[in-house]
Amino acid sequence: MEGDTTVRYSDTDLAEFKMLILEKMEKAKHDLELIKSAYMNDHNNGTEDTSPTFKAFDEGSAVMSKESNSQLAIRQEKFIRDLKNALIRIENKSYGICRVTGKLINKKRLELVPHATLSIEAKNMQK
Image 1: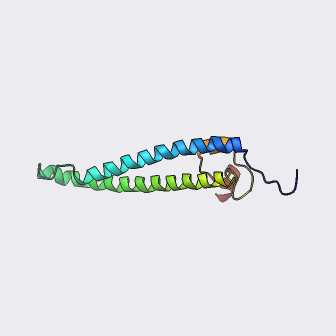
Image 2: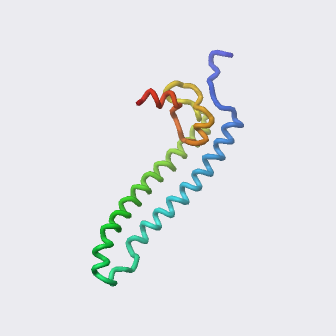
Image 3: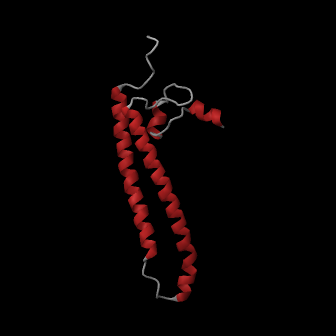
């Protein structure tokens, strides 16, 4: 092995990971739309002028679901951003390389967490 050869996944592997990430990204964007539309529907669910007692009771759960929806949306947006960054790493062929150890991240791990930038050993070192 030459001194300057870096350890990396083959182009074939990278192409497979790219497909996986694009699929996950489609689903994530779809989920984000669902979360956002559920969030929008919270604002106008048409129960304003029905029974006032019900409204008072419902107020708490509406606030609750708005909060959890916006949390979900934020998490989903971060996930999509992470996936986009993973695609950039695929383009510049640095995908799947642990940013701490510089070794390849296990393929199984990448299939489960395609935006991972740490190998399991590096993750354990952080604990």
